[in-house]
Amino acid sequence: MSALEIENIRKTYGAIETLKGIDISLDSGEFLVLLGSSGCGKSTLLNIIAGLAEASGGDVRIAGRSVLGVHPKDRDIAMVFQSYALYPNLSVRRNIGFGLEMRKVPVVEREKAVLETATLLQIENLLDRKPGQLSGGQRQRVAIGRALVRKPQVFLFDEPLSNLDAKLRMEMRTELKRLHQMLGTTIVYVTHDQIEAMTLATRIAVMRNGRIEQLGTPEDVYDHPATLYVAGFVGSPPMNVLNGVVTGEGLRLDGSGQVVALPARFKAVTVGQRVKIGVRPEALRLAGDGAEQKSLDVEIEVVELTGPELVVTGRASGQRVTACLPPRTKLAVGATQAFAFDEDVLHLFDAETELALG
Ligand SMILES: Nc1ncnc2c1ncn2[C@@H]1O[C@H](COP(=O)(O)OP(=O)(O)OP(=O)(O)O)[C@@H](O)[C@H]1O
Ligand SMILES: [Mg+2]
Image (tube, rainbow, N blue to C red; front, side, top):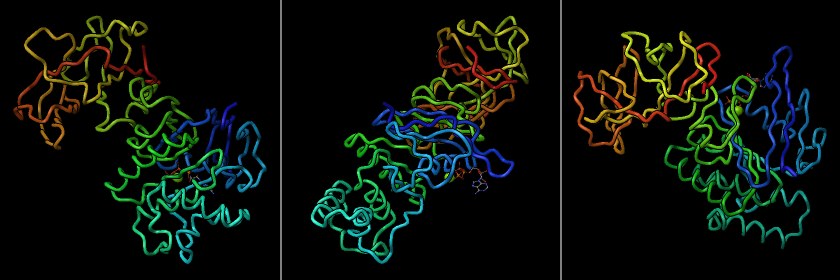
């Protein structure tokens, strides 16, 4: 039985359709990330699962039971919000234990559960403080603790790390992953941060305008983006996308018209078809002296050392290209450099439909 089933969920606000039929089925222990840009409907979907918003159609089942019409507190879920929403006048201890207190869990049992959870989150020495006496990261741990302590069927997180600074966000991300590996809980997690999605998820649902654009493992979504949108959204720096056309000789780039060889696996393309050619920046390397199979001539414009890598920006047939190279690579700005890539890293999308080809 699925831990969570979302079936054809729709949501309309007046005349505007915010969710246009969402289907997802989650196994127990999965970490699903809803990824998408602002306004695509992530929070709306999460709120419908939580019972904080009403669906206009479809069904939500938790452990096999339809929960539409069931009060949020009876759904066996726990939610962590972006704003931690802690009670400022209560100690950390009581903030974490509040849900258990409301459910009239006996005090001894409650204390034990609170201490266990706090220890797990490494905040057991903060139990007597008030939220105002905590750092942002510590507050976030308390908010997570409050959800964790209840041992629900499904955890719902809505951008829980977005209020933290970059370093703390990374630490908490690792912490969340560790917790998930340890506890094997079922999680639905909303973010617009593709790195968070890639690192945390067992599966990612890339959402766009109220629809799921692609649902798959991080590897799937990264290596086999189903659409141009997904290709551009996941990955940083984003995938290079070059406009071109299929000819008898291969793929001819617009602009000055250099030709890139067409890998044999794209059998379905036709001569004259307009395409978008995708290559990830890290898939490019300097072409050696030997006869490289696939290559791209790039006029180098800017070279930036980030520390772990050298980010090179230039133009191929007038179109912008970025490459991520080893940090000690020597390159001359203004020169034209041939970049090589393996043929299996080349992505093709139909220019019209923006769907992946091959
Ligand atoms: N109560 C409401 N009434 C009307 N429209 C709403 C309401 N709540 C949300 N919307 C609209 O529904 C769409 C989806 O909103 P939602 O909050 O789900 O987006 P989101 O993906 O979570 O975005 P963000 O990343 O900015 O949080 C938006 O266009 C929003 O304006
Ligand atoms: Mg939101």
